[in-house]
Length: 197
Image (tube, rainbow, N blue to C red):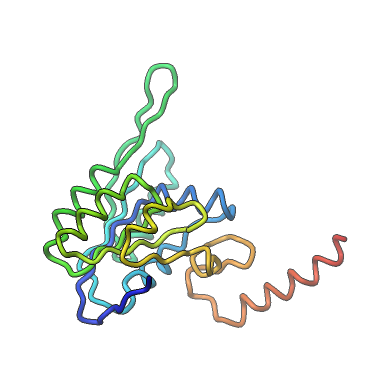
């Protein structure tokens, strides 16, 4: 299913931050390394725009997250979490992300969607119909099978989860750690296993 990615291709990336966040937390108990995700998705091509869609809560910790994304060159679009009478909560960026992708598709050669949400299948099909190459990068274990099939290319972050995670066993800190350190951590982990048994 892999496609040829030309260096001269113009790329726009749309990141469903909540989808990746919950997948990483539920599958690996870790956080997403958005720098590694962006680098893999762009693959040396010309990045026109990268936008992360985020739901805000009342916590102050989000400010550092937004700053980290901005430092990577990722714009953030935020929407407040809605809490209804009775405690029901709603937070959804699907329509906003889809509209932005349709608006920008004519200005790029490839659209990269960082999400495993099957609700985006009609968007992928429409963009492909309009002649835009559509790629998906996400954790395959929590991704929609229909989304995987609809995309021109699918990068499964579960195949090398350590590369895309922060704070997980064997994870890294965003690609700034020398390669030898993760191997050292892995060997330490192996030493700990017999002691626990």
